[in-house]
Every structure is written in structure tokens, then in C-alpha cells.
Length: 372
Image (cartoon, rainbow, N blue to C red; front, side, top):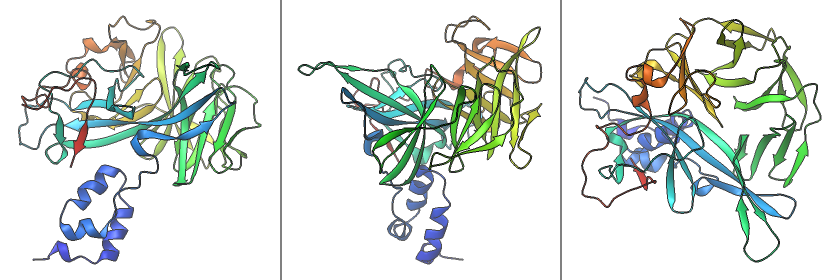
């Protein structure tokens, strides 16, 4: 029988380079001592979720912050009665440690239950990183004493080439203009391209993709160049969202005819067109305030595929205390999450199987550590 602990270091490093998330690397290194010593931990170019200070006009500072969306699955006990996983967004940019947020918004979650474990042993859980959210958080200085105000969070797209070389793409939410920050230049530069205001942006396969009101889609190069990827062919009145799903770039927007419905398109970069997708199959799309992500219905456990979760900001679609609405692609029907049995279990509060009794000190709005 092969002794996996004796695999050559060169081969272990080649395998490690293909691992997609820091959890994959952590689990890889936990196999045995020789694997651990052969592979370095995942690079964390920006400690504690808060990235280097980005200069502004001198009246304050901006912080680039990273949040991660996780899907936690049931313990590996063979118990098939556990109905669903649990979605949570973890922010590490708070002074006291980690903070849990609503996966689809910037709002903090309610306080954790008193019986919530202080430490999560990830060897006993299924953990999937579904995506990341990058936002600018800033302080505005009033010019006297220590009087600072925290400004609202602003969605950005982010690319990092190495620890010292990263790029941030920013969209002015009022005018739809684009600007890029380059860490080595330590300044913002305007992207000189504005046929129509931009609706959304995303970092996809190492490039910045943006889409404007009409559906015109471009790649913004790190040299501020603009390359047309897809011609405009959409109604410019409705906001469009870009979502990555199993290696494909999707565009989602709400189409109003006699009744509202979502339309989904997949990018064909060679033909420079968006092709409509009628059925998402096993995939579920999540459209959040500051990020979008997708997941497999089989991994989620509680819901079927071919649907879209989103926040109904104005209550136009369905009345819901959580404002989380589900759109069924097959039926074309919207409904509050409470109308779908089991769907709300994906969100707050934590499921019973994870909120087990513990003698550790009480934890409130923070997760102090995730342990492998």
C-alpha cells in the first residue's frame, strides 16, 4: 500500500498550487507532518481582513476590507436527517475579531445563541467558500481632535498579483463612472470610458469585467485600457448584476413585462454576446447588496436548483420581514423566503446541529476562531 506521507515535495507543491481556497490548503497541510512542512500556508497579504490604507484627499482614510461567504454543512456523522447547510458571511475588519453578517447584506447578524460553540472544528464540518466581498470603508476627519465619522461601505472589485501589487476597481454609484486604484502608484485614476453609466463590476478569472446600463460589457485592463467583450442588447432601465457560476460569467437582470421576472444570460466571449439561459439546473444564484455568488443546490440541501435569492429593498415584489425573496426560474414566481419550506434555514439563526451546548464563555456578535 502506498505511503502518501512520502510523496515528493515537488509534487505536493504542484498539487497545492491548484487548490482554490485557504481552507483547501489548510486541510491539505493537516494530512500529515510531511505534507505540512512541504507546503506553506496560504498567503494572507492583508492581515485581519483589513487591507492597506488607501489615501484620499487628506480629510480621511479608506480601508479596503474583505468578507468571506461560507457554506457550513452538517457534521460528518452519517446523519441524513439534517436538512440543510448554513450560510454566513464573516468579516475580519472589526477591532475585536470576527463579525458575522447577513450573507446578502451589510447588516450584522443577530447575536449568536448562548450555546454557540466558541471554536468550530472544521474537520467535523463541510466548509465551502462560496465567494468574497470587497468593500471600501472609510473615516472622514472633521479637522479637530479625534473627531472621525465612519462612512458607508462601498462595493469594489479587487485583484492581487502579489503582496505589494494590487488593484481596486471602484464604481461611482451616483454616476456609474469607474476609477482604479493601483497600490504601487498609491493613487486613483479615472477609467476614460463612459458611453453609458456602469451597473456592475466583478473580478473574473484574473480580469475586471464591467457591464453598463445597456448591457455593453468590457474588460478594464490594469493599464486602464478598455476592451469590448459583448455588445449592448438590453433594456437600460433595469440594474444588471454579474455572477460567477462554475467557471461561467452570468448576467442577471429583472425584466418587467406584464409581470416582473428575472432573465439570466451567459457570456460567450468569442462571439461577444450574452446568450439567454432558461434553466440553471442545480445552481442557485444569490444577489446581495455588495456581492453575488452561486452554489449547488445539492450542497445547500434545503432548496432545489434553478432559483435566485435576492434582497427586495423596496418591498415591491413580496412582503417579507427579512426582505429575502426567492425567484423560481421554472415557474417565474416570486415569493418571500418564508413561503418556501426549509429555505429560511439557510440563513439566521444557526441550525441546531451547530449550536450545540458548550461550556466555553459566551460568544455574541463574533466568531473568535475557525480551527482546522
